[in-house]
Image (cartoon, rainbow, N blue to C red; front, side, top):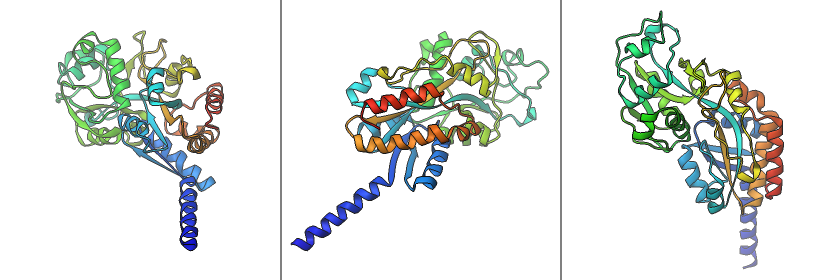
Amino acid sequence: MKMNRMLLLSALAAVSLVAADKINGAGASFPAPIYYKWAHDYQAQTGVQVNYQSIGSGGGIKQIEARTVDFGASDEPLEAKRLGESKLLQFPAVVGAICLAYNLPELEGKEVKLSNAVVEEIFLGTITKWNDPKIAADNAGVALPDKTITIAYRSDGSGTTWNFTYWLDKMGKTWHEKVGLGKTVQWPVGIGGKGNEGVTNMIKQTPGSIGYIETAYAAKNNLPMATLQSAEGTWVKATTENIMAAAANAKWKGEEGFYQILASQPGKNTYPIVAATFILLPQEKAAENKEVSKFFTFAFEKGAAEAEKLGYIPLPKPTVEAIEAYLKTNGAK
């Protein structure tokens, strides 16, 4: 009996040791490329494995609310009421942008400009050809092909969808009335793919297609990104400077779970579809939260350059300091 008890204690100690060497997270595909890079670097330095599953923001929220992972990830920030009901902590991890990537080899690298009104009509299905006069009007000198437009959208519960449809809903009256915003919506036209990965692959494989994906996916796969309009109507590209212009408007407040929406921010040089991506932690799991916070402290302090290489915008130092204070106050550091 004594021997069995000793074996049991040894087994429990081994489980605890394994748990301390592994962190499990799941959620948004939007930040997955940088989370994978940070996880690789963190394991190389500390020996702790961060296992992140890119399953979409909806899945990440469900899993952290069910307490089946150590942290959830969502591009749709949860408001204070929802955080309180689910007993969750929330903080931003990085900022990125959503682009409209397309597959038009006939253009040989020439950029396409898409006005707000044109984007709305494309995704409503009322503009169906690439050489439609409304697209051509903003693209003088570009030989647009007589090719059918194929829409690629997210089929899973997606924070990328939430931020993209937030922008469409805010700037398009018809979209607001007919479709609205959400992690999932009833798309009028198109075909669905799972995750940013799935939509990216659909665009690559389908000539004439267009879809919304995080810019890191477009850059990695050499997909051209449409030039869009700022809130002031000027033409803007998804450059680091233009994404930072949106992020600069953020007013993070720890007492509100850092809730902030960065789409449709003002400024003539501001890219219109920018989003922060958020981490969700269970309030009651102090020990696990401390391990997760160590990982993100590492990411904030040593992972900024890697984030920029992948097209993301690292959080500014004052925001990182506010997050650290928030985590400490809530027993997560």
